[in-house]
Length: 224
Image (cartoon, rainbow, N blue to C red):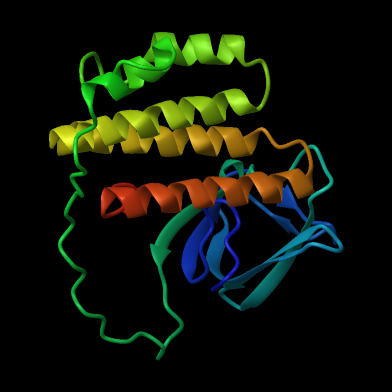
């Protein structure tokens, strides 16, 4: 499997949102771009490499992870926009039609289980109230004054997704799924070093993959 760095995907068009200069002094201006053909992370040198195919030839960019500014793990969305899929010429195969997207409906939980736990836990598992529980978001972050606060909010929405799944309410389960994933992206973006960024990005991706397995398909597949 190819290396995944934030939202970037190999064989997709990318556009530069803000001027970037890499460790070798190579500069790309806002509005420039090309097709990302290779990306890698060197854990020894703590360095990201992006190979971009452009008209007239390819360019390889090297970005150090031990920096507090510029392109780095957890911040690539600020500098690069991901575009359409562009396969290597001659490599595209005929793919079978994707299976229908069907939400998994788990067995409902006992009412005694739903009534237990803290207030935000009970709110999360209730099918009442709005899709976004802003008051609970603020309370969790206020009480958890550390990086784990965003992760706790993500788990709150994951629980809300499960409650709506059990109720058969797919539209609201999708909304909760997307909020859970968005909060895990926020969690990963709080990294303060390259090594921590790699670790938190892995946690984010594993959390997302776990939700997809539970849900039956990925409601965010078209938006990321």
